[in-house]
Image (cartoon, rainbow, N blue to C red; front, side):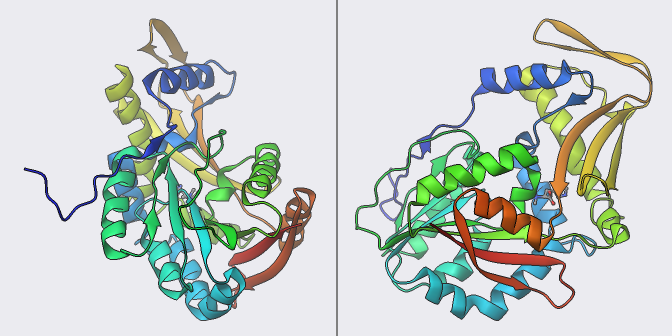
Length: 324
Ligand code: AVJ
């Protein structure tokens, strides 16, 4: 019997299917420096491990960002204004947006965009039942690719895109620039981007954040191979890879790799992929910014950086950008 208390929500689905996943994995493993797209970390289990990473002591990002949000939420809500349409990229468990929603003045709609289909559905239904006045429309998509944005039922004063957590840091400089340009065209003139940008800091702090003692970051990294094994019928031997993460100061990024312990081969989509002993698969980059560098990039994409909030150590920033 249908539970009348729940809205039956069908997400708009532009998410990559199995064919796309296989093609991207094969393309990445075919390069001289093998690589895998970090967006595929977030299957059900990966999303879960990431949530646990967010609780470890060394991974400072969630705590510092939350403290900045708490200190300045009033000002943020004023800038976003009445009747805004709020769209979030990489909404995950939708935990952060609740705090923002609770302070906004009569937002017309909330569109969470995430690649993790399972989590998106569960969380969006839950949110819709908690905020009955709010139009909640989940969109399953890779927000780096093009996807259609539906119209809200009520006319919004402004479109505001929320992109917290420094997820932006996963993008290499050229895609990052292109991404900001596309966000500018999505939110339109006068539209806004509220974005979390992680800042350059002591490399030792960064190193610890991606090499936590409990090994959760390593588990997160390995989960990508586990997912490829399960969803693409591959045969990675997880035991023979090592988690390796370090800060690359010349490129201002933390790099995560998986290093093959020995010479070996895996089989995927009818192909054999070989690894030399010590060869790496590059699984993620997390770029760390200077305020100046980020501003230059944002400005080149058509945004004015209206406000920048940071913590006292300047470890992290939340920035409010308005589209010219
Ligand atoms: C969710 C992309 C912001 O890069 O810091 C955490 C993911 N990787 N630990 C980051 C991640 C390793 C995280 N982001």
